[in-house]
Image (cartoon, rainbow, N blue to C red):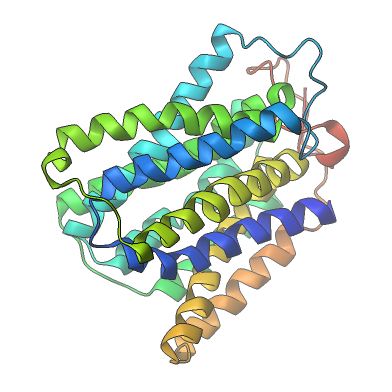
Length: 319
């Protein structure tokens, strides 16, 4: 177990959970236009970090890594398109055809998907302990969210959001060893800006464009700095230290952080069922953070780049 990785992944999910309450302040602003502004501001801040602190979060030395290869650009564009743009669009579509409980429960299955797909894409056998732990985290997440309803469109959009959530970590993991957390964050956010702008035009938001109010400006500033720059750097650094399978389990912290934030702001304590869900998530994390025996080494490697350095894998990496 890597304590720094654990703290960083937990911190990223806490920031994300707390940001849900902040997002209430921008509900009346054109959504995709707001996302464009948010990622544009974040890109400027991250570009400054690329210039002055490129190794923040344990990135590689600048020498020999300044020019991005075609493969890097392809993965970064896929990361921006799926993990940032498509994820947000699918969540918005899902909320129109499903209640928040259904959306949260389906997207909350991401830890199990990462526990299975992470090692399989490296040609490894998934570790039984991590799969079990991720499954427990998913059950706890579903318990926190509760049950809900959705039509066929809503379920499809939820599945798309889940795919985007999984792709966000899997694609980043393939880039972090070569580029580092700062550059992956900066380039993916920069690529997402024109994608969000195009989506806003297609959605007809150009006719509804206006300057944000003072409260909306403050909220977008918080979302750009904390939710995008700080949370992305924390998550990607923790992901690189823990590996995609273990880091993915901390997605289960998100509904807990959201629950606590809402309880404090609304002055309404969580229900008994939600409290049980928190305990289930904690149990899954405890199981998953234990030492995992090495998986059997396959005959050949499927993917040439593993996401995490060997000393942080503790037997998850193979080949």
